Length: 489
Image (cartoon, rainbow, N blue to C red; front, side):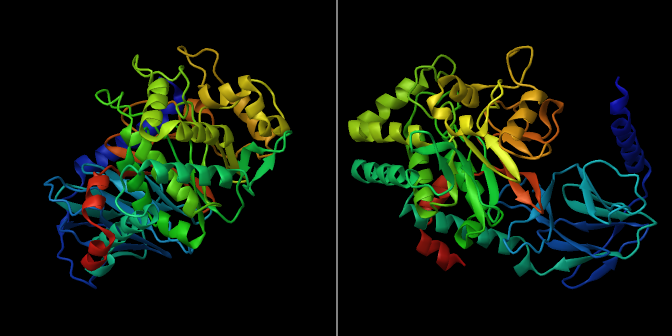
C-alpha cells in the first residue's frame, strides 16, 4: 500500500466511524419559509419532492431532487443536486450530485475562505454533512460550525421550476431543428451540409493554413464559456439531455457559451446496433442545425470515427464503410461528397487560454503551432490527434506527461491549462475522469453511455466535470411538440 493512499483511507475510516456512532437524527417538519438553525444535532426531513436552501456563512446552496426532464413515475429514490448559486450571469451553475446511500461534505477553507464540497470527510472544523437515506435527507453540522441553517424553498423555485426549464429547453432545440427531430429528406439534408461547409470556409476563429484554407486549430474568444461534449456515438438522447440541462441552451442563445463536440458523434456502440446508421444520420443533422443556428458558438472537432475510412471498425463491423454506403443510399453521391468535404474542413484542436482539447491525444513528437494549424496536410500528425492513446501496457507507443506538457507549450498555453480528450474511456462505470494517468489537469470525457452522460464546462475559471442521468428524450420531444410544451407551462 502506497503512503499516498493513507490520507484518503484515514478519511474514509473517520467517515465510517462517524456514521456508525452518530446519534439518531432529529426529525423536523419543514414548511415553506421555515428556518432551521443547524447545531450539533443531526436533523432529518422527508424526501417528498421539496427543495431546501443550505446557508453556511456567506454561501447559499440549493438542494433539490433531480427528477430529470420527464415526469418520472419511478419508485427509485432520485439523486439530489447540491447547487451553488453563482453570480456568473450565464445561468450555468456548479453542482454536486448526491446519490442514495452517499454523503457530501461541505466546509469553508480556513485559508482562502472558499467553499469546498467533497465526497470525503474533511478534517475542517466547519464541516456540514449531507446524507441521502433514500426516503429522507440528514444534515449534520460540526459543533464548531457557526451561522448555518436550512430553509425550505417554495415549490415554484424547486424541482417543478427546473422541470419546466428543461422541457422548455427541449422545445427550443425542436424549434432550432425545425420540427420533429427525425431524418431529414435528401434535398434538405444536402442543402444543410452544403451550408455548413460554406460556413466553415469563413470561420473567424481559425487561422489559415499555408494553402489559404481554415487551419486545423480553432481558438475560442475569452468571453465564451466552453462546454465540451465527448464521444456521443449516435446517442441522440444524450445530446438532447445535455441541451436540456444547466441552462446550456439558454447560454448559447445569449451568446455566453460555446458548444464543442470532441468527435465520434456517429456509429453506435450498442452491440446489437453496430450496423445501423440511421441514428448517426439524425445525429449529424441535429449537430448541423446547431452549427447553423450558432455559427460562432458551436464547433465540431473531428474524431477517428467521423470518417468513411475502412480503418473504422468496431467488434469486426466496418462501420466506416457501412456509413459511406448508407449516406450514399439515403441521400445520394452529392451528399456523400459534401459530408466528406465537411470532414476535410473540420478542425482537429480547440483551445483558449482556459483549456485545450482534441479527440484522442497530443502528438508524440515536438510540433509548432504552425505545424498544428497545418496538421491536415500531415497524415502522421492528423492520425495521432485522431487515434493516439495514453501510454499503457496495451498501448506502449502512447503519449505521456511529457507530450501533454509539450502540446500545451506548442499552443502558447500555461503548464496547468486543462487538457481534455475523448476516445479512450477508462471504464463502464463513469463518464468523466480527472487527472488521468496521474497527469495533473489532463481529463477525459465520454458522452455515449446509455445510463449517464458527461461534459466538461468552465465554472468560476475552472473546467468542471458535470454528469447527468440519461433519459429517453428523443421519443418524448417528438411526442410533445413545442406548442404543447408551451401550454404545459
